[in-house]
Image (tube, rainbow, N blue to C red; front, side, top):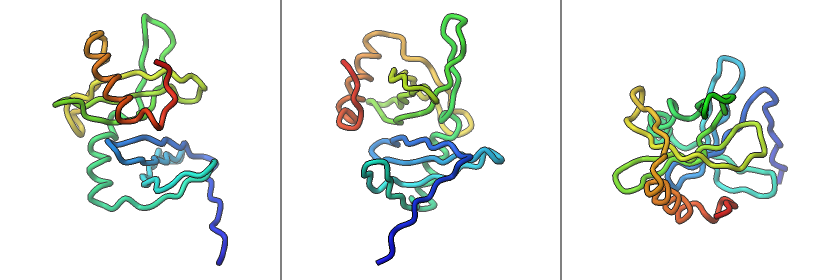
Amino acid sequence: MATSPQIQFPRAEYLPFFYEDTHLLYIIFQRESHRELYLIRDTEDASLQLDYPGALFEEKVRDAVDRVLLVEMSEDGGEPKHLALGTYFPVDDDTYGAYYERGTDEQTLFFMQIVGEGDTASLEAVVDPSEHARVSDAFMERYGNFFSVGQ
């Protein structure tokens, strides 16, 4: 049996994330900011086994996350942080995203509420301590085995 090829795109950014319970990978190419979405079937060491997620599922995910996938956040007039969506998940009747800083080893997560869908989607920072605790608990319950997050 032939060995599977090792495929890399040198001018692309790889953004793994969870859409609810589905592990996905966005590949964003520098040229034309073209985006490809793949389902992560398996991970082993530094290898990913990818699959096409299907047209209907891809459309659903793109509609939900394209507008909120990559964002900039500024705190107290400081340098903007370039964030990427790490998880997209429901908590009760609301939808939240856990964001991480792109291009750094920083492991801080930023929780944002995702309001609306598609072209009208917007983000609101989770600043209320009780809401933050509720969202953080839901995140850890759902994704705690995938992330090493200090409590």
